[in-house]
Figure 1 (cartoon, rainbow, N blue to C red):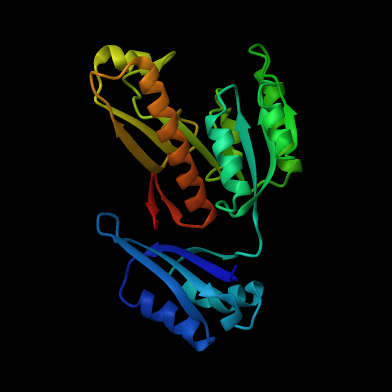
Figure 2 (cartoon, rainbow, N blue to C red):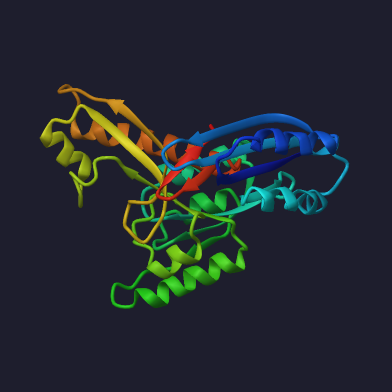
Length: 284
């Protein structure tokens, strides 16, 4: 695989940003292989993502960061410069439903997800054999309803020890405490069906069947303290009809959930998602 630096920028919009940044990269001899920009006319905010062929620059990512700093200050940028040779470390969290975990592990092994899977954390033992088949460390952390704080303290320790850059809730059926949401803000990705808030609670697809819904959907989003209300990364739908049974709806839902979660995670790993308040700009 080619070696790239990825520059992502968010700043107040004004004339000359693209010219200034592109000119700077050209002055360093850099080759821009992919460029994306967006201006939010409602908020006056500008977003940018560049992929730069690292070998064309002949300098380390640290040197490039230092050289770019004056431009970042000039335009009041929130920015980051990533080196694709530094692979992200991902922790997967799961309960008893396997479809999202199995799909992500397969895609990872097939090379579709450019990351290292540092471990799987679960509040049940059900998925141990799957993780161990992929030679991924499996950590069973039961969640005591009467002492959740101790359980999530152990979860936090496991994540920190794994030096995780990203945590994926692959159908992990526990609510993360506010302390974890704050500690890993912008790093925790979740998936849920898109019926909320209409069909909350147990057996949402059966509730949807009784209501006669025509669309099955799923939402991939970042986790915040407000349940299932964080910035949305990706969504998709599957049309259903009166011919389909509750079992069909569950099957369709699983298909949509795993596909949406995989796309959301891949875009996050490729630095294509910029958080803007409670929304995202996704350069997909």
